Length: 399
Image 1 (cartoon, rainbow, N blue to C red):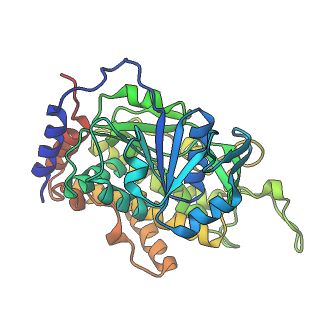
Image 2 (image 1 turned 90 degrees about the vertical axis):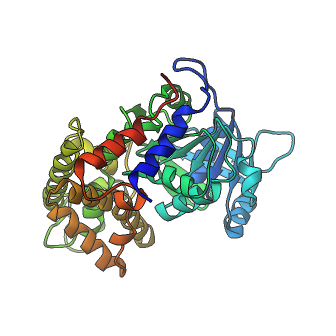
């Protein structure tokens, strides 16, 4: 399939009957959360805390069983504190199910959680279940998350007039122990809708995601994603040669727990690599008409959190680190490399990080990344790619 077919999809979305006009009141009171990981548990609890009826779907019996045994999701730290019960009759609680249609059938907003490959799977299997007016929220959407989801829905036969939200993060960092989550507040993150021109959707979502800041469109929010350029160097480039950003520890000493933060993984060496990756992202973004990207310090603060105290992002364990590297490479670095090829720009630092990540993970994950040519956009002509991306992101029910 080629870009023109994706444009037809965008045009079809624009031609459907209008929903609520911009500025009109919109409220999400029925929420579905797809996934059973820590991010899904947190979102389900946050939505319940705001008074919404919440259904959590997982295809994995072990995830649902663990949650049911725990009796609920317990939040501690900087977010709403308490235990948010599951499957309790006669009281507000998170309803759990292993049936996808039961989870999404009556939902107004649907959160797609988990790693990139699960978000892709959800988009494909949701295609025949979605209805006019529903909202899909991808958080974190990373780069091209909304465009990829729209393409997969199109391939899956989706005909509904829906809105896809690409949010570049979550409201809190999570330190999880089963269904017990300790939260630390995350900073502002970019968010946009596909189609564009639906600001009322983002306004309604701020009830659950108070840190989202509207971007012009998903092209802008995608290039504003700095997760790959921060997370991959922080997790891959450590050791004696590069050091880190934490305090010096005498030989035989043990670092204090409060000094163990994601931000402390970034020292001068990692920061110099981040600067190279950031420069390449800005250069490619400019060729696609996006020039107001964050500076390096803002990107680091957004994706690494605070060094200590409030807003501190925890250091992931080995398994979690591998998952973060995989998603950041597939969903952030690979799309940038794809856009660079179309723009005729060399991006050696980005390509080097993709190669290093693939080597560490033991699989060539570059081809599995989000690529413009893989979502129906001509990968040989910059002007054509820009035109199609603008058409996709700009389709609106207004006008």
